[in-house]
Amino acid sequence: MKELEDRIRRDGTVKPGNVLKVDAFLNHQCDVALFDRMGAEWAELFAGRQVDKILTIEASGIGIACCAARHFGNAPVVFAKKTRSINLDGEQYVTRIYSFTKQREFPVIVAKRFLSAGEHVLLIDDFLANGKAMHGLIEICDKAGAVIEGIGIAVEKGFQCGGKELREAGYDVESLAIVNSMDASAGTIEFA
Amino acid sequence: MKELEDRIRRDGTVKPGNVLKVDAFLNHQCDVALFDRMGAEWAELFAGRQVDKILTIEASGIGIACCAARHFGNAPVVFAKKTRSINLDGEQYVTRIYSFTKQREFPVIVAKRFLSAGEHVLLIDDFLANGKAMHGLIEICDKAGAVIEGIGIAVEKGFQCGGKELREAGYDVESLAIVNSMDASAGTIEFA
Picture 1 (spheres, rainbow over the protein chains, first blue to last red):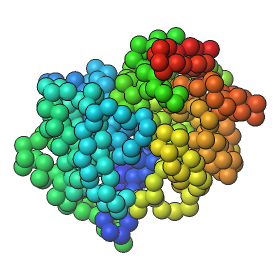
Picture 2 (picture 1 turned 90 degrees about the vertical axis):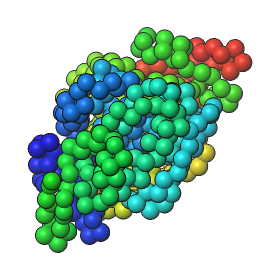
Picture 3 (picture 1 turned 180 degrees about the vertical axis):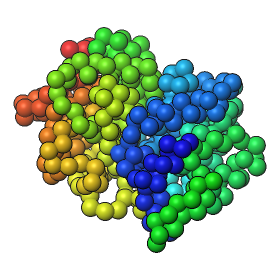
Picture 4 (picture 1 turned 30 degrees about the vertical axis):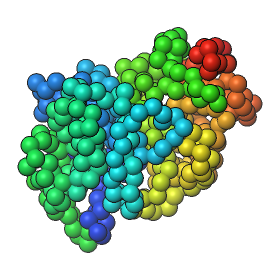
């Protein structure tokens, strides 16, 4: 998606350690008009797929998924939780993932009544790097018996293994911008 | 907002300890069509107010704020973070709040470059009970010198002190549903 690539070039910053910061428009401050156009793009890329529900993970996936849902017939958005709460009761699907950016392990929790066997699910997240978060969501879908129709990613780090592994495993992964390489000292970003 | 009250009566559940669960449509599974109509309602209630930016707090506020932003000229949404991350660098506004539902203290963090002196801000959150989260956001706006134009809340627990205190302090608080009382044994909810 050219608009997203241009925006990353303009407002993203590359930090040492392969960190790409897009917090000006994607995951701290949110450009909702851009999110809406990203949703429209995914709707084209996943045209013909049955999407009963969109599953994402807190926190950065939520805004993107909620704006995208309009383009999938206002499909309900379920966001997996990363912290336990007294509001989380009843039976739950739970797994654990390691977060590179938070540098610690998190639980990933979805209440069983919001994900059912045979439901057709689109997974959405802001970033795909090593794929840990996405594998957590897939594991939860598998436990529920839900059908994964596709995986929509805003920014994929193409030089890390996550996207490659998911595509080899047969998932339809549509990343709106794939970063092939980036250089913190020069501040340059190359897209696929 | 009658639609929200009806929905809470239909799909909300009352638990002992004054816990109102609305996770079927508001803060775990998200009804984005409802969120859109909530945004339209706030746009009417805050008509004439200048809204340069919407500020909310992760995680449950994000989807609601992003859907509402369409009705405020696609104003950027900034969500305060509750966990530190290697993606959070630069100067930050930080305060701490106690979460009743998570039963522990959290930091509330907003990068300084996403909140500026003189910016007119609408605060949005899913719940208002004792007002701890909202006071955290207000403190951050005060530190930044931002102008709080109003506070949009989905569900206010009118029998707790948060809304009363904020209104007495002069804030324009618009809650779309105000619960006056609820009874866990009977499963009943009374609205203002």
